[in-house]
Image (cartoon, rainbow, N blue to C red):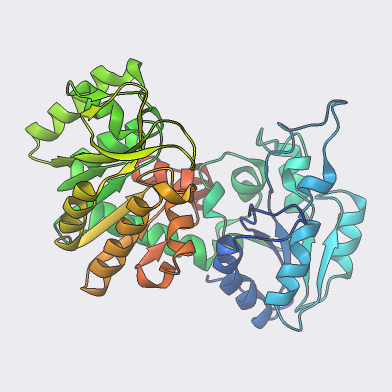
Length: 401
């Protein structure tokens, strides 16, 4: 971050889109922890931090009368937690993102202080990348720092448009953004081999581009979660009532053929923990993944799959993990994801480089307390996916201009 920050008002875009419980307390602080080094650096260098972030999707979840549920989506809830993390630092809250009150509060802001602006998405122009809104945001700061990798794939006013109002010498990435880009680039451009990609989650359609790209540069691709059953059915397997995208069967076969041609090993779960209902209380049994009876569904990978996947992971030098192996939110179907998390941690201990990205796999690693036993945990689900797919992200592109 090569910016002169002394006595500067630093407009800082972070990603504080964190989960809150019914008492509006932070339940997963990964993204806040990720932004702290940048905030502390700004304050240490004699600057004041003006924090912008979004929280949830207030425009899409309006009340019946068309108004925004301010209490549900206000960034005010984040302030007590942030104050606690920045011991001794004055953290204030502004109930608007732009406008007269924001201008006045910024004017009164002193070096070493922090001001959190209201949820950027309360403004309809935010998600449209509105130029006028971005101009008002830009006027609040002397310099602009983008540390919000989680929203780098969005062409929004506070992430992409606002950067256009700052010269190259007056804008910079924060430490988190730098680390995210460096770690993802290492996997893409300079991996030690063999490189194993573990892809889970519900749908093939969500990860088509990623799978296409992985087959171009990975040595092994492990497929778990609901998406595995589309591949298994495409191969002629009986998968019962497991989640399948019937309109993606041809595509699944195409991807399998491409992998074979490129000599990339694709691993699908040989067995599954199946259930007769989508419920933690359902009747459960281990079944071969291609022989799941009608009325039953695969909700996790079985022990044979766990062993095979673990063996592949432990022989890897670079590991990319995106998505769970099953319905890990339900205790009876969490073992597969936990086993993979342990295997990734063990491989890392042996010297492999591991990058964990995507909300659910990050949540699994955090829940198990293994987040410090993998090389890097990404804060950006969708952004990391698009970066690995080879796309240029708007939030990154805007900083170059």
